[in-house]
Image (cartoon, rainbow, N blue to C red; front, side, top):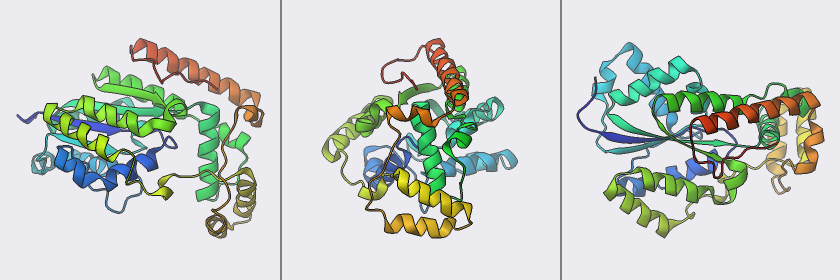
Length: 297
């Protein structure tokens, strides 16, 4: 059942550790101004992971109660949802098809998707460090890397969405991190109807990257702090370790640099390379713009 009114929806689907926290806080902070421009970014409320969970909740409710679709208050023509786990969820073909059908039932005839990927060695390290930092993860990077599947997930998600005629834009965070907000601005401006597009363009030019809290960047601890936190995790002191990291937040963050590829096993690097090959092949098959997409170790 499709509504007569045509709407546009923007989905920022991840991957995690590609600037998602920074972007989500930016759009959450500016949501009232965005609404005045004609783009609705529904209030994420207390969520620290964007507002995409709201759309997921409606989708799941519609499976048992189809009336949810007709009862939703969609008063605007343009909506924007962000959730870093969307990519993993939409990598499953049946789920992806049902979700896109749900969006069509809401009257979203134009579905624009933004997917950020990242070079595997850098991305795996960042995911591992985040796990060590925020949970009781105590495994080494070599052990953790055996389960890394993010680029495979991105490839499957991309294939599913393109097959369903969604407009997908893919960017490599490793290449665009320094001006990631400008790329998001451009994506939204080009995808919106004329009046909203003009309003957004003026707003983004005026606000730039201001109004983003400094702490919105999810900093990766340096190697020394990660080693301490892993040790505490191993002995069941993860909570105390998180407190330690907060008190030592003045320490510089760390990231994986090019010479550190030796931190991975040869098997992991081979798996990464195979994932890169599959992803690059899908990019070519989907005939997407190759600028800012190329992924490497």
